[in-house]
Length: 406
Image (cartoon, rainbow, N blue to C red; front, side):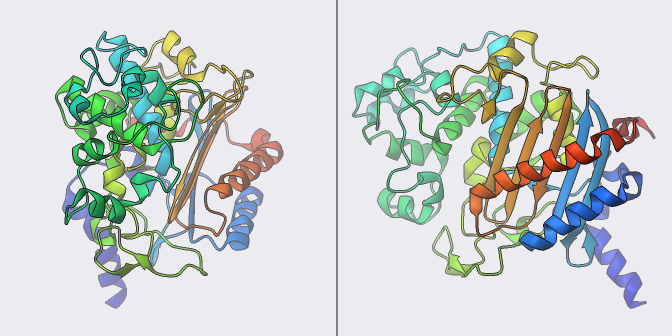
């Protein structure tokens, strides 16, 4: 009886939501099993004390392998459809949204962000540095707008921003923008680059301004559903905010409680240490690795599933200009066709890597390590190692077809 109650408790969020999670409900771990590779992933998890990992492997737009390892939440195992925070992989989604607006003639990459001909002129009255009027949409996409993280990333310094702005709640995107544009830029836009989460928040606001819609709702309808992704959401800050099917996040064992982003007191850093929702298109999306593979399949230039952006847009997003210039949405694109997008913050590490032969590996964890963002290098090395050992042993089939079954 107790076991039955436990099962019903674990299933209740999905049953009560009434939502058809599509691919996420239909894929199971039993569909993907390669014992030697699975053992290697388990060993990697043991080394880094990871509670759960989700891995999806796609080749030429066919999903060959999708499996969850470890635990999602308590007794609930990680499965292919488990939802996870993907941190800065969210920027890839936002960049796709911008490219679709460009294809529809709503903007071009050279469109100014501020000024009388800009997308967000309502903030001009707060600007004290005229160099802001030089910032373009492309500068935001490439982290070349002049923003700096010196003194702390404002997107991860919410308590300080609240104090500076004089608000008792986490500032809205509008409040934060009004405050931050008063600061002088750190460098002339386009002359160098410095990674900026605030820049991608501005891109989220640009999407809202141009479409006249909520960023999340527009992205779900115009970017995600066309790719076959029905279960992507802007994530919540606390455990109580989790979505049906979402994992629990964990800190590494040496981690200590941190101050809540909104001054509520001490919290586990992955649940309240940062304002996840406030990141919006810079880092707030959650989804499963198979659906993330569907998104990649819709922007990779491979014709099997069809792309939702033009061949020219794919080229613009993946063009390698130099070692010192970020790609659009992707963090690094090599000329041979190896593209990389990483993401990490407390409780999450995510990697998306495509290879010249059409293979794409996506791995997301639900546990932080003490290495922080540097852990992406280790997951990248793991995927390359597994690929060299097991790529030719992956089953030849397409698990995406599961989504089409009744």
